[in-house]
Length: 318
Image 1 (cartoon, rainbow, N blue to C red):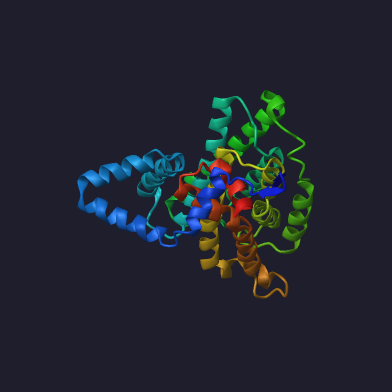
Image 2: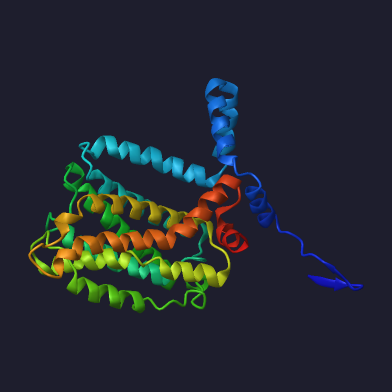
């Protein structure tokens, strides 16, 4: 508020804030969207208008393209087994890194990308690959586990490495170390310590079992540097918003898969390791809870037609 002639004038509402206040005044907005979709199926002209409206939304185009690609992969590589969900989780993760890498290459800038997060992901992919290439304990049961799942993880490693290279070597002038100030050693150290104590035994080879557990535990908190960077900058870049949304979807798929088979991860004859399955599922659930607020505002921004780059502004204004 500001005083002018002794009269206080209320602050002007920003466009974003007005949009979200309007959202509060329309609790049945989801119903109206469903009604519009139903009408569109009954009227070809309305269907064309609806498709035209949503294809103008960048997020819808991004996710629509991936959905078509994922469906194709499912028909080609899946045996119809539930375990393909683990491969799909890896595919979504690889897709998120590809989005970031392509954006960096097209804009010649790494603005808004957390180098600390990407360095953690290099560790995640490397450790997981050491557990799934020479052994089969943590692979999907269907034919995608023959080679496709490993290829997705290897591509993820290469893409994360290329992004780190861009931050450190190719476009260092566009990287802001002051905004990316989260010390990633604070998440690497605890993840390593916990993996030494609580790890599955599906490979029956302790170094790779520890490596797999370390990758899973670290991956569950790797997004923290990016969140801290968002908070320091006060806004999120579009490609990093899509990246985090894709990572959340990937973790959800992984959570569903391991929650359905967590008993295989535990050793019932060990007084500590009999809880490994519960811990693996629990740590992934923690990540979903941590990312829940961001995903809620991400989805609301898409519904409102507000750029997802403003998702952090939305979060602070609500």
